Length: 181
Image 1: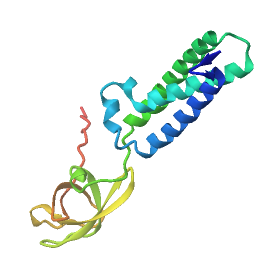
Image 2 (image 1 turned 135 degrees about the vertical axis):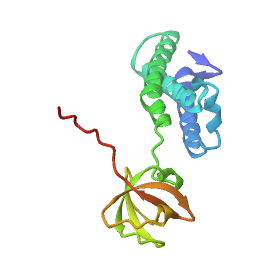
Image 3 (image 1 turned 30 degrees about the horizontal axis):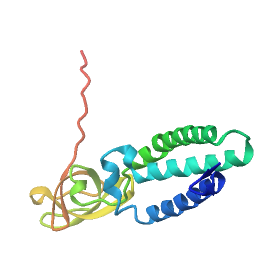
C-alpha cells in the first residue's frame, strides 16, 4: 500500500525517525514546554510523542513481519501504542511528576524540628546544634530562646531563625504517665 506516494513501510520508518528526533529535542527543552501538560494529561507532549513513536514502531515491525492488510496493521499498531502509552503514563510519567524529592532546604523549613546540642549554648551566646533530616545531618549555629543556657547533648526545639541563627528552646517530649491504682 502507498500513502503520499511512499510505501507504507517507508512512511512508518520516516515517522519513527522524526518522532525520535522530536522526542530528543523535547527532552532537551522540556522545561520550556512544561506548562502544556497542565491542561490535560493526554495533551502532554511526552504522551503524544510516545504514542506516535509506539504507533510507528509497531506499524513498521508488523509491516515487515506479517502478511496482513495495511489497515489491519495500522489498527493493531494503534491499539499496541495506546496500551503502551497508558502503561508509560501511569507507571512512569505520573509517579515521576508527583515525586518532589529534593536535597534543598531552607532555614525556615527547619522550624519546628527537634535537634541536639553539640556545642553548649551559653547565656547571651551561641552554640551549635545538629538536626537529623532525610538528607543527613545539618549543623547550625544556635542561641537559647530568651537567652537561656542549654547544655551539651540536650534535645532542643527550633523556635525561629534570625539572621541565620537558630533560636532554640530545651525540648522535653510529651510522654503519657501510667496511672497506678
